[in-house]
Amino acid sequence: MTPSLDGKVAIVTGGASGLGRATCEALSAAGANVLVADVDESGGREVAEAVDGAFHRTDVSRMEDNHAMVAAATERFGGVDLVHLNAGVSTGFGVDASFDVERYRHVMGVNLDGVVFGTHAVLDALTARGGGAIVATASLAGLTGVPFDPLYAANKHAVVGLARSLGPSLADRGVRFNAVCPGFADSRIIDDIREGLAQAGIPVIAAETVAGAVIELLTGDMTGECWFVQAGREPAPFAFRNLPGPRVAG
Image 1: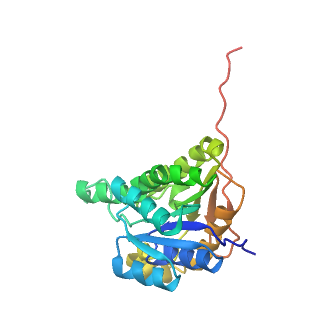
Image 2: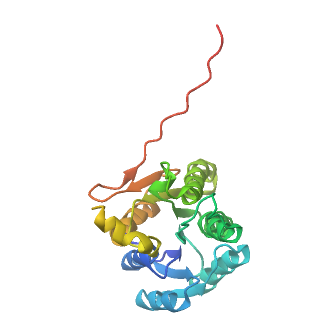
Image 3: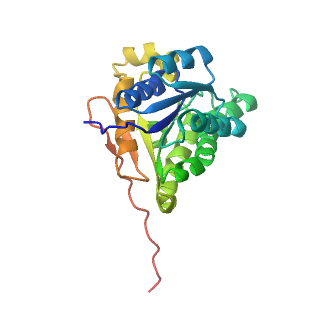
């Protein structure tokens, strides 16, 4: 059962559709005031109206947009308590002849910079409210190798590493930081491969299932964890193996 979030203020990036929209709806249902942040103005405004929240156009790859997003939430609702840094785009190219520097900068800007910039922008606002929680959307691609999409795997591995590192380091500010790592979930990112997934018999995870894991991470007491979300399994923290320690010559 989701704890009441009455009086809490939440920001969701990439909130206009897919996983972001489902999280906006779950947060609102629990009583939170939600700021929907996205570059998709029509979709974002539609979601904001549906959850009785607010919309702010935000390109998460731009630092100034992240600061403006936080300022908008603070002005409208009085502060920020919960943040889902969810905005993401598909990659669809590699380091071979398909590589394109401009496209590379764009996907890294959204998928990685958007998490780093968003975290930086919101920290003071969370601290001002006595602390809070951040959940970044990574992927199963951040937990394993993905030969067919290595650059997407690279930026999602970076988000996983950030979550594991920031979790402990932000504890003294009362801020928890975790990541959610879904498999193939119902969002725009899989639009180009939906048919292939169906033909291969790979189930698509409902966006609401991922949103449920995000809510658990936002309302729990864990930090520095990366929760996998897979069809037919309960979301849970991924158990990373410890690094081998040094050996001292005898």
